[in-house]
Image (cartoon, rainbow, N blue to C red; front, side, top):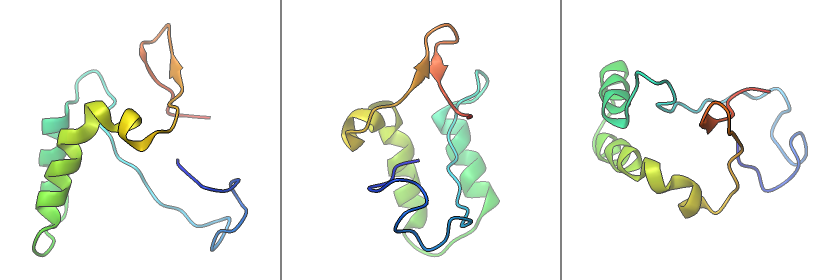
Length: 82
């Protein structure tokens, strides 16, 4: 989760929930994730192209965003829990 201020401050609601979906499992790939995303929601014009572009960016995303991503060296993957 990226935020320009501390979590809970300057937000619409501390209880607001959103979601991020990413291919983090060993058996998942950006291509499979994209296929699932497109199958899950039929949306109007252009959004599919945006989703495809985001999935193509995935390997470079942390550097492009400029935010640190915490990882677990033993597991060899990013942290995705508390």
